[in-house]
Image (tube, rainbow, N blue to C red; front, side, top):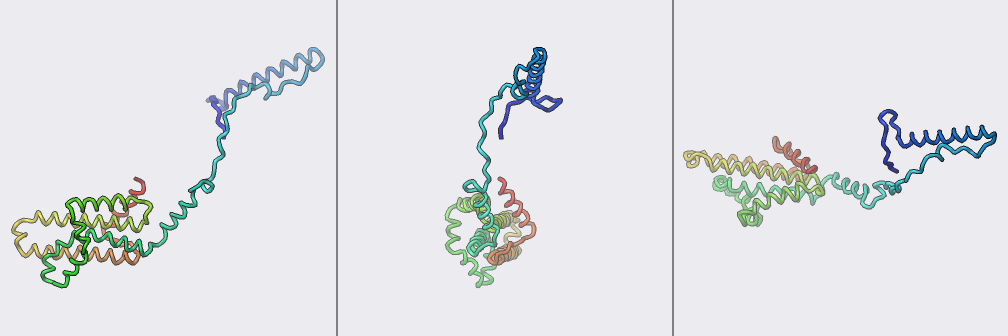
Length: 245
């Protein structure tokens, strides 16, 4: 498309330059015709309306617009990538998503000291973390680094499958809930800490934490979104907001 630097009249919404050219051309043509009629002969063809207009400098035409399909890396590649991300998650994505729940799993292990002593077979839950437990607590900054890695490298990475980002964010939210439970344990009054109520409190919170984690892992491995009350709704919003940040 060509663009011209015209000034528009507020009344007629037509270029003033064109109006002045047309008036000038009409005056020239009428004067030529009157002179020809006075002399009784035509002095030549009257100048045309367009011929009386001064030539305007045309700006160079821009290159024709190319459709996104014709451009390299256009809609074809993006549509292929979007189609892959909209497909059901593969086994690799399911196992990777289930692995994220090891973060709240490791943080909630210390809550079950009382239940491990009462039910010796449940010590396998403690040993299930294995070397991941040592890596997670290898430094005092390791949990914080893993937290930011999950949030920045996985949740905000729109190139990953939405299923993976959702489960990573839900694992982070569950880990925050477990951290709040640990904080509440530290602020319990002394007569509760040294009473049997503390042991029952730890046992109930351990059962709630691990039943929730096992529920999420079970449905994640099956390829379904594990829906938790109050938690999953905020996870959905956070994952959706990360796409526009």
